[in-house]
Image 1: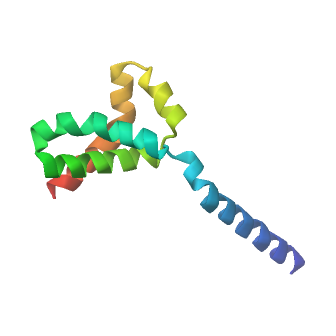
Image 2 (image 1 turned 90 degrees about the vertical axis):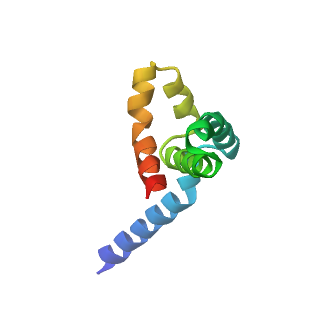
Image 3 (image 1 turned 180 degrees about the vertical axis):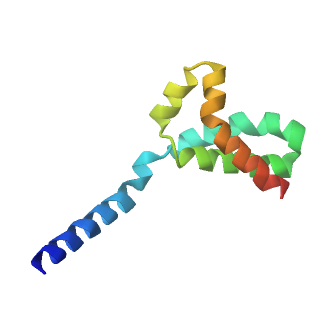
Length: 100
């Protein structure tokens, strides 16, 4: 019984730690804005302003949930093909979202 209480405390501590530090594993607001404004103008030409806003916001949010600023910087130094493969999941997800 004593072991269960200790295990429960450990699990709660891990959960709280993960919940509170989750923002450390995402992009900064400034980086998100730069990424958005890199996306929006070209997307607007093809999608129109409303759909471009939705697509770019979704893409930035989706990438931010997976990558930090430093990780994005490292990936941006890779080949275009590598970048495409790495970021394609977000593009597909958000494209499907705006088509619904």
